Figure 1: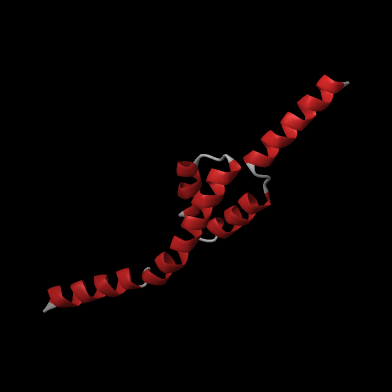
Figure 2: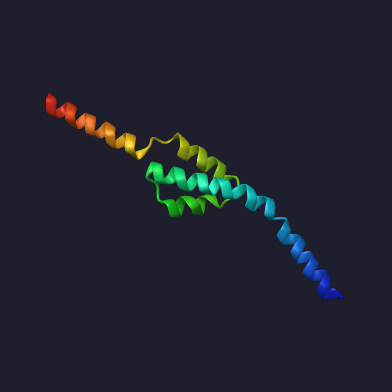
Length: 85
C-alpha cells in the first residue's frame, strides 16, 4: 500500500513540470533560430535556454543583436568605401 502512495506522489511531482516544459519548448526553438542568425553557438544558446526565465531574457537579448549577414554587408560596404578613397 505504501508503494502505490509513493508512486502516485512521484507521478504528481513529475506532472508539475509539464507546464514548464510546454512553455520552455517554444523559447528553445526561438533561441536556436535566433542564435543561428546572429552567429552565436547554437548548443550554448540552447543550454542557456533551458534555464527558466533566463530563456525569455536571452531570447530578447538575441533579438536585439544585429544579424551576422547585416554585419558582413556593412563590412563589405566599408571596405569598398575605403578602396574608392
